[in-house]
Length: 422
Image 1 (cartoon, rainbow, N blue to C red):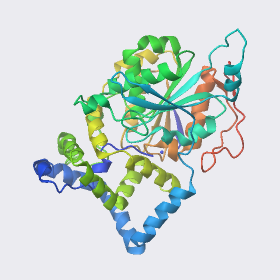
Image 2 (cartoon, rainbow, N blue to C red):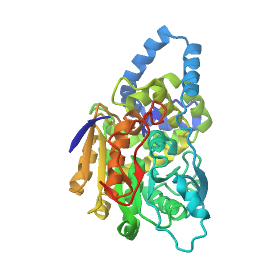
Image 3 (cartoon, helix red, strand yellow):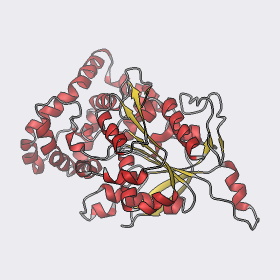
């Protein structure tokens, strides 16, 4: 196992910590959630302390101006590709973008009768409360190096709200696996596949393998599982002390459901408590204290964009997620598993469990790193992905991958598409 220094976070409970309901229709849920609320308050304490100091020293107007300045200063999330929409089995529209190789346009216009071999395609699957833009740094580094697909999970980013969920059908990780299959059919119907998933995105890849093992056997040539889990997420404490953890596990789904029924009220509360919310995002997203403020703000924007009813809709699926058996479909493939040593959402033990199920996989523990490692340690994560791509034969790896502050390579990438690895 390699240990490398590298973190930003999707947080199943973070959006409800500072939210309060004023509607009578949810009063019973709040009475039941007394213990859960108290326990979640412990999680917020560290963030709240920092916010209190900030309030003393910096006015609200200045803090708002600072956030706007950070939004304007960075071009995080600005990269776009060839856009498209495909439909899931319930007709939900899923938004995807493709970054083609430069010569692909010429190849598509060629009148040669001989059909060239399909290029390998890397498919990136993002996590809970995020979007495809969470891969900003990796996308910047890999442009022109390998054909890549980025997509927004249902009800996230630019994809539509899940139609099955609108009809009352519970969201499941299996559903997300089928969504991924629809995206692959639309964007990469042939050729080798390298699947990259962060947190919920990694679970989505496991669900795909569980339901479509023949696809994995015939076409998948590499897998990267980043800050994810194959199951037993109901045992995660999110950094809480033992007292109150049980209450949180029992009551949090109901609390989130209640919040999801009062969307307008809760979203207003989220805006009013933006400072505390930002503090909690940083606490659960990053493992180091020197995170670029622009990156921290970018993570905040990504999570803020997820409506509270979507947060509530997805959360129960994680408690029943169990895809440990599905991992066997990746046996014999190049697999890299990345974990942040300070990840409180999917702790390192969950990556270790994946490694135990896949002895041939490489496990890399990133030091001083939280949950959203692809944003906190972009250079390291990108280099590890490049090494995986080289093992699959999709690219040749440069000596070093240098990602600039906004995702642009400061030295230029020497990686080239290729049919053989190093």
